[in-house]
Amino acid sequence: MRARRTPVLVAVGLLLAAGGVADRAGRPSTTLPSSIASRAVMPTAAPASALSSSWFCVGATAGDASSADGVVHVANPTDRAASGTLTVVPMGGPAVSTALAVAPMSVTRVALRDVVQAPWAAAVVDLDSGQVAAELVVHGLSESDATPCSSRASDRWHFADGATAKDASLVMSLFNPFPEDAVVDLSFSTDQGRAAPAAFRPIVVPAHSLVVREIGEHVRRREAIATEVAVRTGRVVAAQTQTRTAPGRAGLSVSVGAPSLGTVWQFPAGQLQDGVDEHYSVSNPGNREATVLFQLILDEGVAEDFERSVPARSRLDVVLNEEVGVPRGVQHSLTVESLDGEPIVVSRALVYAPPASGPGRADTIGLRRSATRWLFAAAGPVEGDGEYLYVANTGETAARISVTGLDDGSGLAIDGMQGLEIGPGKRARFLVNDHVKRPALPIVVISTTPVAVERGYFQATGGVWVGPGIPLD
Image (cartoon, rainbow, N blue to C red; front, top):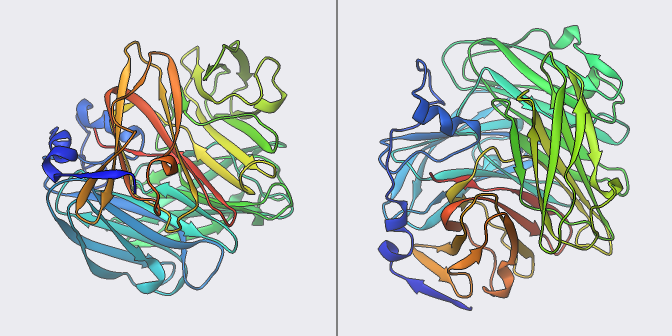
């Protein structure tokens, strides 16, 4: 192992001492102060001063099905033990709670099927502190995927991409963790126009329950679907689980939706090479056309920005492989910005086939913010899998990043990954396996200036995760 152990207080603890007001967006409340509302654009850990925090993990099965069997990973990057409960809510059944303890600098994993047996289930992680975060890993027949759990509920959720074509299944999970019923409408922008089936308007989600809908039962044979979840009363957490079995397009993905629209979306990971297709989907659910700018940062050289128009209440697909002027074989990051301020949601699909790593497919919604500290709670269990970090610095100041692993009570300051400089307007990719010869660990990335970070995890047996970390500030 090429890593050195450092005392807990030196490695990470002092760097996690930033404070603030607890983010209570996941619980019934009045209007949030602006300082807390800024944390609500994507899953974000509560500050160190928080007396409690909650995470909502949605979009997995619990043992009765093999398509998306779920495991919750709860990581604690602080020098204090955290405790609480994990409550699993099965579709159509009573909730079951179990005690949860997470030691300092450690991760606790709970398989949903070890708590309940159900076709679908959601989980609530309630903790007695901040800075601890949860990620959901789903395991299919031949591959896995991971997504941050949600740190809040919302009355709106947005998904930019999905499919109900032949050999594709799209499932929407609606979870209501609160004591009042919620009433939800689903509507869709597809490659064949708008759709708002009566069967999805309204959907009642009873208190403390999970409701699951197969979108293809009423929106059939669509190659591309953007979904909007609008809540008439109450709040929910919405996630979609997508499975594809067609050769060359197969994959499993699960993602919590975007709880709000935005004008800037970041994707630190990207590379056009043989065997890799890179797709971006832009959804504009508003009533005005949006002019969207695609901006690339290359490891070497430059690429011209390009614009596209997205009609009102519609969607757009951009296949980066087909764009002129985007060099092949060069790593890049991409930022999508709405130039006229019309809010949008953007997602990316990376499809891998030989000779690239894989085979596999990774679907993710873009990052809404940069941060100086990122946590990746989930870690693959197999040595020999490839783990990458992708860091984009879109700011005007050079960033120095350091990477620490959480190893059962100790922080590992990983050799060769301390004080790495990324210039302003630059990006970098790092192969973690070059520095740690062991199964993957939960990781904390700390930067001297805000950056955007994703992780890519390529399983030796096939299957790909590529997605965002969880901001700790």
